[in-house]
Length: 219
Image (cartoon, helix red, strand yellow):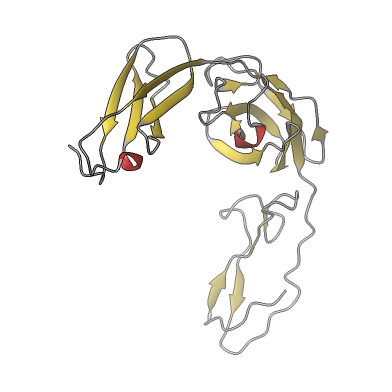
């Protein structure tokens, strides 16, 4: 690699892994900006030998199963640190397989987000929240397999919106908020051109429903 056109100064160099399944690293062999070694440059100088030997990261993989009719590719997998902060994402293929890469040694919690597919969001271990989710331990270089999940069908709310002639119903959004579960937050869907809507994958509870007209021409 070569980075050109730099003014005089001190620089820190990061080798970023993205989806290549090696650990990101700062020169020399540091895991953070603070630990990285600065490279000093003067005007017109060519500095060579700013090298790195990258280390294979850990991967977490598994299989998602769900009731018939669920689009598995609409489900996403999030890998969280033990404190709940999100570190990596992975998509699910049509057969239900997923693989998250680029993980350092550590303990993780795995979340399966279902995006109105009709099944409930879930954390690995059958939990409904990060606090109760099971942790998995991974070591750099390890391919951790078998982190599987069986997703469960949730409840749904359906209805039909009517409006005066000239209102574009496809611009309307329906937002469902839990009245009994603060962790759920809210979920919104678009309304079909004929006014029908369906919000699915809802956990048991009571809900408030809001109709948001947007720029449909309605109030």
